[in-house]
Length: 225
Length: 208
Image (cartoon, rainbow over all chains, first blue to last red; front, side, top):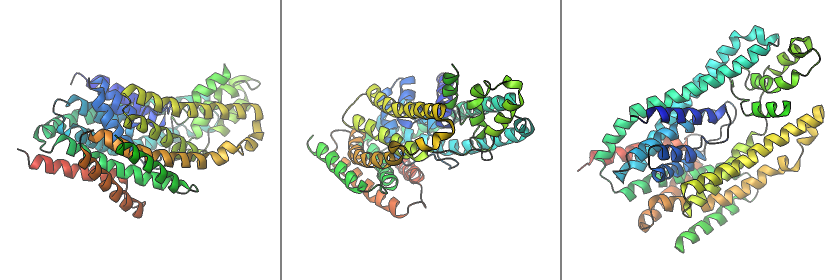
């Protein structure tokens, strides 16, 4: 568990990126899981987990007050777990994806609580804010940013600490073939991506034909290999 | 320097986002370096009145262009790179550069428009890129989604497993149709969580 501190710092930074700062999308699972994999010594396994999760994350539209999974910290947890267990490859990608989804679920809940916390802080400063206090505005912003960083670090540390032993035991007992396990996992992820593509883009005129054309090209590339 | 300060602060505009004032405090935080330039500085009534006004309730605009356009498009292009065999660094670089060129470009454009046009900013929002951009990006993203999904599945499954690949694509297509039909009632990521958890349970319960 030597990796816990650096991973929780990475999870903190990536969790902060989801909403608060700087929204450069380093929090996307493709990035988070790959970088976390690199942290624990297996970038490629992290990338496999990240790419699978990215298919699922396509369905997440973080508009305003909507509730959504928190991918940043979660991808660090899942990518690191899969990469750390790469010596037994059969179930690692599946377990990494599972760990990420479970953490992302809890992470979404923590984001809601953070927003409630921010509202409570703002209510306490209402008088100062109504009088245009510079200190209240800046202080509230810094308090929100710090709270989010702490939230994401704690989430990463707790999730990694709790899930890693379960994941290690699961991978040790895994009975299905590596490729079958990956096929089931990425097959399910691809369903979410395809449904998300339809949902997001179908309102644009002709988008279904663009999708069909793209699909044809993708399948042709595969057929020519 | 004020412009740079405001720009950097825009990156943290959602730092205290909450369900009551939404972006409000963040807007005040971002504009504070500009408001300091008011006659009398931070102790003047004008500064305090402006801070109070800007820090009140504030929603957001332009969500769809970024979250339902630029972001999935960049993500899908990076997945195509992954699917054709690019390494981790290349995949991440493609995604981050592509997304952030648009992300920072939009922020810089918005700030410049506000800076130079003041209250006449509404006219700039009629910019063809903002009006028609989402539809163009949606078509492009639909095309790259069609290419990216099978290529990504193929690389994750592995190069030597044709029947598994075909099975994964077919099962994915069937589940996708189901998800579209129950649109809004089932969240895809939760369904995947349940399916994979069940798969894992079966895998460990039939352990050797």
